[in-house]
Image (cartoon, rainbow, N blue to C red):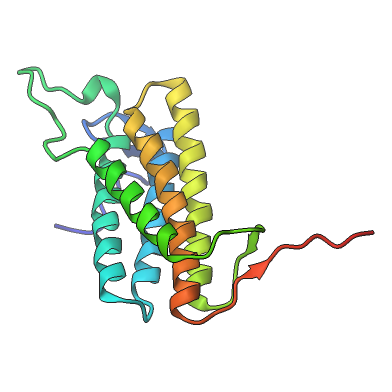
Amino acid sequence: MKIYTKTGDTGTTALFGGTRVKKYNLRIESYGTVDELNSYIGLIKDQDISDINKSYLLQIQNELFTLGAMLATPPEKETLKNGKQRLNIPKIDETSILSLEKKIDKIDEELPQMTHFILPGGHQAVSFCHIARCVCRRAERLSVELNDQEKINTNIIIYLNRLSDYLFMLARKLSKDLLVEEIKWIPEKK
């Protein structure tokens, strides 16, 4: 299998199911941003962090591939003519969302209560979490817009929302683990 197909040379690409769309199509932007997010999560996973965190980040990366496949499948192409699902993989569902919520709650129990907004930074691993969080929020916004144009599985939006919360909490946890002081945002008075 060659890595290049030349089918995209005219500025189009194929969705799952064969429909060709422009490369700037909102569906492409949505799952392309999820792919970007997945790359940043790989960067976090490559940092000097606990094996438990690395393992969970790998799980998230797998879930993001699934989520991207769900976004790459237009609703009219989800089912084959014989009634079978075209995308024959486990979907992002309530279980995936609950897993994120449990991780968020567990981290929250270990951290001091937040009293201020926190500025990103303090350590490279923490900063990568914040970058991933911002990319996740962009993926969420694009998915919401896509859902306004053509319905998508609502678990996609919920999952991305929880994932951005998890990435924020992971940044706080890594600050604690790495003995990095969180930088509080305290607006200057004029």
